[in-house]
Image (cartoon, rainbow, N blue to C red; front, side):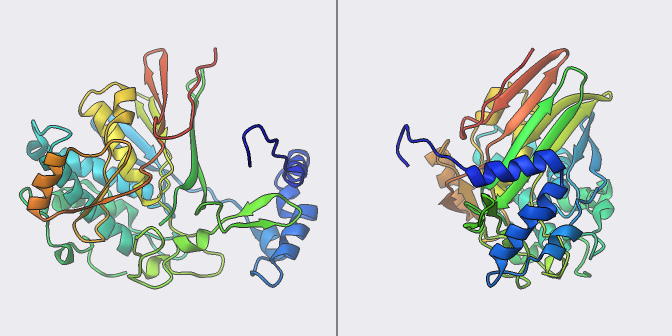
Length: 369
């Protein structure tokens, strides 16, 4: 494509018109379903029956109290809500360790990495589709359990990766092509919406005649326990492949309320970086009292248990070389990642709505009177 060239998608326009006219049946049944099923012949296992039988499922959101706010976030089969609550509460439990520690210091990054290491150990073992596996959500976000995990943090050096095990015992990834939008209206209704096709252009296949890009969500399953997916994240039997099963994700659409009024709506794409990015922005706003634009634009980093003691930094705001040197002395390794979230957030201050789109991305924010 060249600048100024008009890109037309008549097949997609027709599909969208059918959805507009017939609702969900305009996609899961009729002409569109016929075209998808025909396009899959010889390439995959999706049939007209699969499409007709598919239903969206209501899941009760995860809710938790944190620093005077009510956190309302994504339940399994997303791992994001559990991960976000664990990160927020574990950091609060380590308040004395974080006291007077600057946001951009080596010690701050080390402490956050120690927390993230334990969250990802739990994610790998316990998170999956609740229709197929009893996900111990209440135990994972229980205050006593999180305090116990926080007390395992080594304040001086990285905990040995092999010693960081799932915290409830041993009983039982994603790419950047995810989209998020946040909305608040004048009646205080709030929407935090995240959806994905997983890899760049999903599977790279368009169902002929529909204009629809097929996703590659199969990679969000654990194809083999302990083997990383395309994003370097490992899983267990809790997230194994099975018919009619929905894969684990990290999507974390989140709403914060205070005194029953919306305080913040936030979310982002970013695969396994999603809930660590949201955690850092929320912490920047409420722990460090940063204005929302600064909180979203500040340097972000990521650690996910594996590879061992590896911190991912971002090209948008690279870490200070001296800070990297101090962390390397503790035993950390660094690698560059091309993408670390594209936060879309709205903060409500009284009657004022303050929207912010991540300067790393192409999103825009608007207040419409």
